[in-house]
Image (cartoon, rainbow, N blue to C red; front, side, top):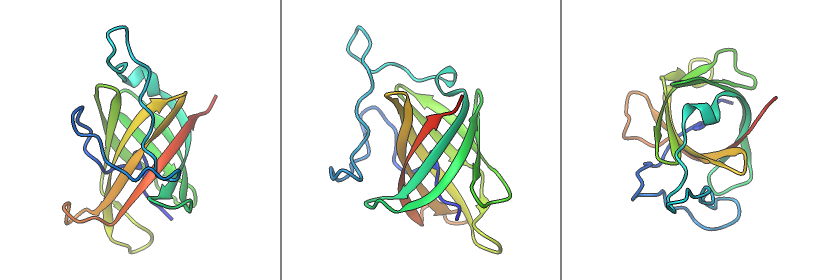
Length: 157
């Protein structure tokens, strides 16, 4: 089942002044703030910080139910994600804003003959892992919400 990734991704706006608000239960707690720079502000995230291959898991928001497992390959301005059990990968365009990344997918078919979806993910580097939240919308109706998820990825050697 193809779900959201990073950014899987995603869903909340990633402005410095507007952090997505989520319940503080253990399964949906927002990622902890990243390390600060000498000036006290969060360290900037860049493509060099996330370059490489990552193995990730996506959960439905508010639950511990795994929706998807995936492998992501990150380059300078894009992430390509291959979801387990899916033949085709999904490409995400990535931008960086302060300590966060925002990834927006190209429209993709959800299952054989399924509706085309688009994902938006927001993530941060936390203790060596990428963590974040994501949302899926119908590609034809970007103001619709199909699902909201949280995700986590670990760099592979």
